[in-house]
Figure 1: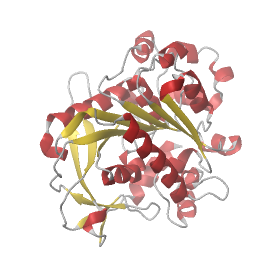
Figure 2: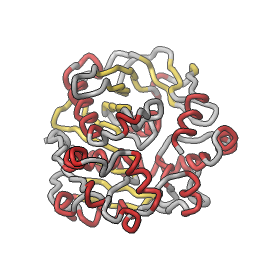
Figure 3: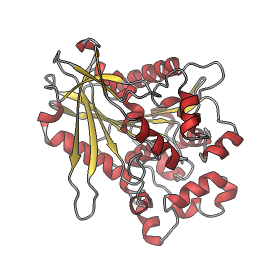
Length: 356
C-alpha cells in the first residue's frame, strides 16, 4: 500500500500562501536532529504559540488534502508551555496529524512531530524499517531537542509532557509509557493470532527476524518524562504483554475507530484495520487511569488530515486502492470526527497534565 501512497504524496506535495488571519496561525519550523553512531538523523517539525502577525503559509495543502495556516520561523510566545509529541503511522509523516497540532497550539501547547526513518512517507529504507525499537527512541530524542533549545519554541514546562500516536504511532507511545512488546510471542502462530495482513507487516518491520531484534523490542523503552499518552486506533496493540500494560503508571486515553474497514477493502489496501488492538490495550491497562472511547463514524484513516471534495477519485486515479485514506464511516463527516477527537484529547490532557 504505502509504496504507491508515498509516490502519491510526493506528486501532490505543494505549499501555497494564504490570506488567513494571523490569529489562526501557529508558529512553525523544521529542523534535523543530527545522527550519531547508533541513531539516524531525525527530521522534526515544530508548532508553537506565537504573537507574530506576518504572512502565513498554507502548510500541507495539496490537490487532495486540506492545509493549515502557519507562520514559518516566527518568534515563540513567552512560556513555559506544555509539550506534546506526535507519532505518525507506518508509511505516514508529520503531516497526518498536523490538524491536531493546530488544535493543541490554540490551547497553548508546543507540538513536535518526528518523521520516523524507515517507516515514514519519504524514507522507507529497509535497513531502518526493521529497527522498529528505534521509534520510541525517536520520541525521546525529540523531547531532548525541544527541552535543550528554548529558542526553537520558547520555554517548556518539563513536568507537562505527553505523546500522541496514530496506528503504529500508537504502538510507539505505549512503548514510551512502559509497554513491553513480545516479538517472539506474536510470531508464534502469527496467522492464527493476527491474520495474514498483520503477519506481512510484521515481516516488513523485521519482527521475529533475529534474537537481537527480539530482545531490543522487548526491552524497556519507556521515558519517565511523559505524563500521559493518547493512542488513535493503534496497532499492533495485542503484542504487548498484559503484565507490562498493567504496570503502566501514567494516564492513557485510548481512542479507537468506531467501525472496522471491511476485510476485503483492507486486504486490497494491505492494511490491518481492526479495533481489536484498542480493546486489548484498554482491557489490560490500569482501570483507574485509562479512558477508552470508540469514536463514532471513524475508520482507521479518519484520524488523518482532511480530504478535499473529489480527493478520493483523484487518489484512486494516481494510486489505485489508496482512496481508502479518504474514507470514513457511512454518513460520517471527518471534520466532525476531528472535533470529537480534539475535544476528548484536550479535555484528557488538561486533567492528566494539570499544573502541580
